Length: 172
View (cartoon, rainbow, N blue to C red):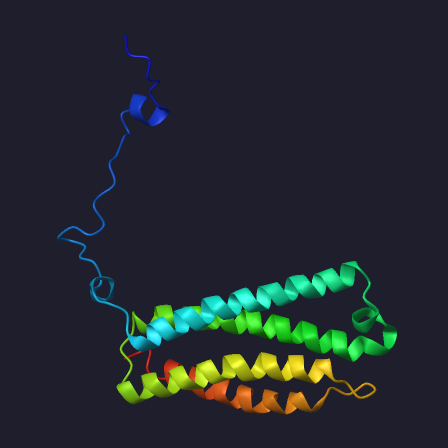
Protein backbone atom coordinates (compact mmCIF):
# COMPACT_ATOMS: atom_id res chain seq x y z
CA UNK A 1 0.00 0.00 0.00
CA UNK A 2 1.32 3.41 -0.93
CA UNK A 3 1.61 5.70 2.10
CA UNK A 4 2.79 8.73 0.14
CA UNK A 5 0.29 11.52 0.43
CA UNK A 6 -0.44 13.31 -2.83
CA UNK A 7 -0.42 17.07 -3.00
CA UNK A 8 -3.34 19.22 -4.11
CA UNK A 9 -1.58 20.06 -7.33
CA UNK A 10 -1.10 16.38 -8.14
CA UNK A 11 -4.72 15.55 -7.28
CA UNK A 12 -6.05 18.40 -9.41
CA UNK A 13 -4.04 17.33 -12.43
CA UNK A 14 -2.23 20.66 -12.43
CA UNK A 15 1.18 19.17 -11.85
CA UNK A 16 3.51 21.00 -14.21
CA UNK A 17 7.18 20.21 -14.47
CA UNK A 18 9.62 23.09 -14.60
CA UNK A 19 11.38 23.44 -17.94
CA UNK A 20 15.15 23.11 -18.01
CA UNK A 21 16.46 26.66 -17.73
CA UNK A 22 19.61 25.91 -19.71
CA UNK A 23 18.06 23.85 -22.51
CA UNK A 24 18.47 24.54 -26.22
CA UNK A 25 15.76 27.22 -26.15
CA UNK A 26 17.31 28.93 -23.15
CA UNK A 27 21.12 28.68 -23.31
CA UNK A 28 23.28 29.67 -20.36
CA UNK A 29 24.79 33.15 -20.57
CA UNK A 30 28.36 33.16 -21.90
CA UNK A 31 29.73 34.56 -18.64
CA UNK A 32 28.51 31.49 -16.75
CA UNK A 33 30.87 29.25 -18.71
CA UNK A 34 33.97 31.43 -18.51
CA UNK A 35 36.36 32.00 -15.64
CA UNK A 36 36.15 35.34 -13.82
CA UNK A 37 38.40 38.18 -14.90
CA UNK A 38 41.01 39.63 -12.52
CA UNK A 39 38.77 42.66 -11.90
CA UNK A 40 35.82 40.44 -11.01
CA UNK A 41 37.92 38.40 -8.59
CA UNK A 42 39.42 41.58 -7.08
CA UNK A 43 36.03 43.17 -6.45
CA UNK A 44 34.42 40.01 -5.10
CA UNK A 45 37.34 39.59 -2.71
CA UNK A 46 37.46 43.28 -1.75
CA UNK A 47 33.68 43.43 -1.38
CA UNK A 48 33.30 40.38 0.83
CA UNK A 49 36.34 41.09 3.02
CA UNK A 50 35.48 44.74 3.49
CA UNK A 51 31.88 43.75 4.26
CA UNK A 52 33.25 41.45 6.96
CA UNK A 53 35.43 44.26 8.40
CA UNK A 54 32.71 46.91 8.40
CA UNK A 55 30.04 44.63 9.83
CA UNK A 56 32.51 43.68 12.56
CA UNK A 57 33.14 47.40 13.17
CA UNK A 58 29.39 47.90 13.48
CA UNK A 59 29.19 45.12 16.06
CA UNK A 60 32.04 46.74 18.00
CA UNK A 61 30.24 50.10 17.91
CA UNK A 62 27.06 48.44 19.17
CA UNK A 63 29.10 46.82 21.95
CA UNK A 64 30.53 50.19 22.99
CA UNK A 65 27.00 51.58 22.96
CA UNK A 66 25.68 48.68 25.06
CA UNK A 67 28.45 48.94 27.67
CA UNK A 68 28.34 52.75 27.74
CA UNK A 69 32.03 53.18 26.97
CA UNK A 70 32.79 56.82 27.84
CA UNK A 71 35.28 57.27 24.97
CA UNK A 72 32.36 56.61 22.62
CA UNK A 73 29.26 57.68 24.57
CA UNK A 74 30.16 60.91 26.38
CA UNK A 75 28.25 64.00 25.26
CA UNK A 76 31.44 65.76 24.18
CA UNK A 77 32.24 62.78 21.90
CA UNK A 78 29.17 63.21 19.71
CA UNK A 79 31.36 64.01 16.69
CA UNK A 80 33.40 60.86 17.27
CA UNK A 81 30.27 58.74 17.47
CA UNK A 82 28.87 60.28 14.29
CA UNK A 83 32.12 59.85 12.30
CA UNK A 84 32.55 56.21 13.34
CA UNK A 85 28.95 55.41 12.49
CA UNK A 86 29.30 57.12 9.11
CA UNK A 87 32.49 55.15 8.43
CA UNK A 88 30.73 51.91 9.26
CA UNK A 89 27.67 52.73 7.13
CA UNK A 90 29.61 53.96 4.09
CA UNK A 91 32.05 51.05 4.30
CA UNK A 92 29.23 48.53 4.39
CA UNK A 93 27.43 50.16 1.46
CA UNK A 94 30.61 50.42 -0.64
CA UNK A 95 31.37 46.77 0.09
CA UNK A 96 28.01 45.85 -1.42
CA UNK A 97 28.71 48.15 -4.38
CA UNK A 98 31.95 46.23 -5.00
CA UNK A 99 30.10 42.92 -5.01
CA UNK A 100 27.48 44.36 -7.39
CA UNK A 101 30.24 45.76 -9.62
CA UNK A 102 31.92 42.36 -9.83
CA UNK A 103 28.61 40.77 -10.78
CA UNK A 104 27.97 43.53 -13.31
CA UNK A 105 31.33 43.00 -15.01
CA UNK A 106 30.25 39.49 -15.94
CA UNK A 107 27.10 40.77 -17.63
CA UNK A 108 28.18 43.88 -19.55
CA UNK A 109 30.97 44.58 -21.98
CA UNK A 110 33.11 47.48 -20.90
CA UNK A 111 36.06 48.67 -22.97
CA UNK A 112 39.34 47.55 -21.39
CA UNK A 113 40.38 51.07 -20.38
CA UNK A 114 36.98 51.89 -18.82
CA UNK A 115 36.96 48.55 -17.01
CA UNK A 116 40.44 49.15 -15.58
CA UNK A 117 39.81 52.75 -14.49
CA UNK A 118 36.38 52.02 -13.02
CA UNK A 119 37.87 49.09 -11.11
CA UNK A 120 40.75 51.12 -9.71
CA UNK A 121 38.60 54.13 -8.85
CA UNK A 122 36.00 52.02 -7.07
CA UNK A 123 38.60 50.10 -5.08
CA UNK A 124 40.29 53.33 -4.01
CA UNK A 125 36.95 54.93 -3.08
CA UNK A 126 36.05 51.88 -1.00
CA UNK A 127 39.19 52.41 1.04
CA UNK A 128 39.28 56.23 1.16
CA UNK A 129 35.69 57.14 2.05
CA UNK A 130 35.24 54.96 5.16
CA UNK A 131 38.87 55.58 6.20
CA UNK A 132 38.27 59.33 6.06
CA UNK A 133 35.27 59.06 8.35
CA UNK A 134 36.94 56.62 10.75
CA UNK A 135 40.27 58.47 10.96
CA UNK A 136 38.38 61.75 11.31
CA UNK A 137 36.48 60.26 14.23
CA UNK A 138 39.43 58.74 16.07
CA UNK A 139 41.09 62.11 16.71
CA UNK A 140 38.55 64.91 17.17
CA UNK A 141 39.13 68.59 17.96
CA UNK A 142 36.22 69.94 19.99
CA UNK A 143 33.27 69.45 17.60
CA UNK A 144 35.41 69.07 14.47
CA UNK A 145 36.64 65.80 12.99
CA UNK A 146 40.34 65.06 12.80
CA UNK A 147 42.68 65.49 9.86
CA UNK A 148 41.80 62.07 8.42
CA UNK A 149 38.58 63.54 7.04
CA UNK A 150 40.57 64.98 4.11
CA UNK A 151 40.50 61.49 2.55
CA UNK A 152 36.74 61.76 2.12
CA UNK A 153 36.52 64.26 -0.78
CA UNK A 154 39.20 62.39 -2.76
CA UNK A 155 37.32 59.13 -2.28
CA UNK A 156 34.02 60.74 -3.23
CA UNK A 157 35.48 62.10 -6.48
CA UNK A 158 36.94 58.69 -7.34
CA UNK A 159 33.59 57.05 -6.62
CA UNK A 160 31.78 59.46 -8.95
CA UNK A 161 34.31 58.75 -11.72
CA UNK A 162 33.96 54.99 -11.23
CA UNK A 163 30.17 55.15 -11.35
CA UNK A 164 30.20 57.41 -14.42
CA UNK A 165 32.71 55.20 -16.20
CA UNK A 166 30.52 52.15 -15.60
CA UNK A 167 27.15 53.79 -16.23
CA UNK A 168 28.07 55.37 -19.56
CA UNK A 169 29.01 51.97 -21.00
CA UNK A 170 26.11 49.87 -19.70
CA UNK A 171 23.63 50.57 -22.49
CA UNK A 172 25.93 49.49 -25.32
